[in-house]
Length: 499
Image (cartoon, rainbow, N blue to C red; front, side, top):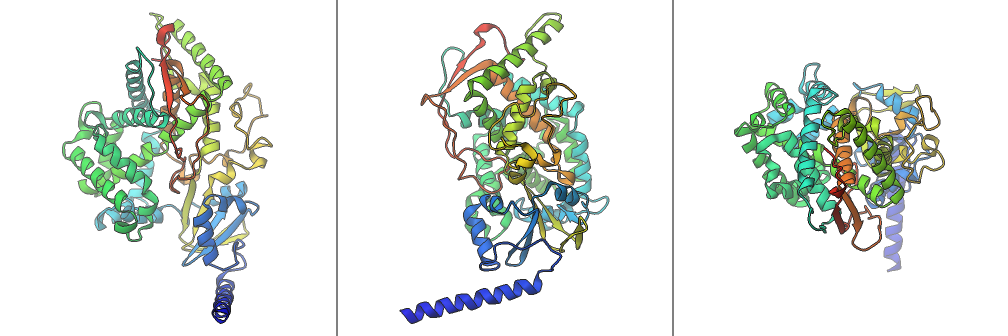
């Protein structure tokens, strides 16, 4: 027995020495320093799997560092100055190769479809779709139509709920259903696939399994349920496109124009349906948990609730005085300006709960900041969780939920300013999320309507923040591990309603 242990120890020692020699021979002195070298290549893999985002926190002292995994280099960027340097090289540090891989694994596109989706030429699909989204989802009539329809649907839904007696739903379940239905209805119109409860359930399974599907290792074994859910969702979108649902009543102009971009790029209707199934995760996947956490922080703190409600009532009163019929009406298009405390609470919620990581691939050797060599084929990662918990960016109260953090007392107030590079909720640079305006409108609009229309309290009598330990790594904003049973009471007896 002792001999066996000695042999195992010696083999482990020899293996570690050999792996260290391999690392030393392949690690350029100009690269960012490599970390976690107890057993090169092996220990980083298991520690990342075991500790998740804590792995990044433990290495936050480095401005940039290298994680060597079997067959892969990861460069993790912590310094805000280096983040800016990375974003200055969108051609050599590109998201396009990753998108090309995702087309085959997460989306399940055909080979011709993968070729189209991965085309990064000057006039290729990636650039065309990027430019289309930047235009279609920025401030303008298209965005205004989507959010107006969303708010109409939310107002209509809430006006019919719990008018005679309180309701007792799960908080996350209720928010998830309300936001999903209003958002998808505003986007897809009367042939909205998410009207089918089966498709909503399939979407949940697909979303949870995005990381396992993206990896692409034996998906029929390690991601069987998400794979089947994806195919069910794809079928529903195939029907949507075969019936020209994007041209039907109340479908957004965005869906019509998006279909033209897809089809003119050479995608078949089947690949368009697959792309749309994945796109629905981008539309809904982070909006729902963000709305949950925003309302959790507001309703669990009476001071925040009253401050936000006071702002909303003031905005209602001002708007009603401007209307000829003096109807109580909230101008949700200017909510961030008229309700700075609510807007600040929203941003602080995103700062506190965002877990997203921007990822690009090095397509050719690149030196950044005249100091660090990034090698071709490697991945560059910028974890938001590090930027959002950096005292040098946010101050000594970085670990506290300060709902007024983003409020400025006047236009010349610099006291609360922060480095914008340190706010990574929607990514940055070329990977800056084009749907951020839609997401903000949806979340703030839903929160405003809920605050005005309902009182909410936990049935247990005490607000307890849920854990997020079960969240999948693909989540940019983690949903709660457990739902909160709540009591919802309608407040419309005072005659003031969000419209």
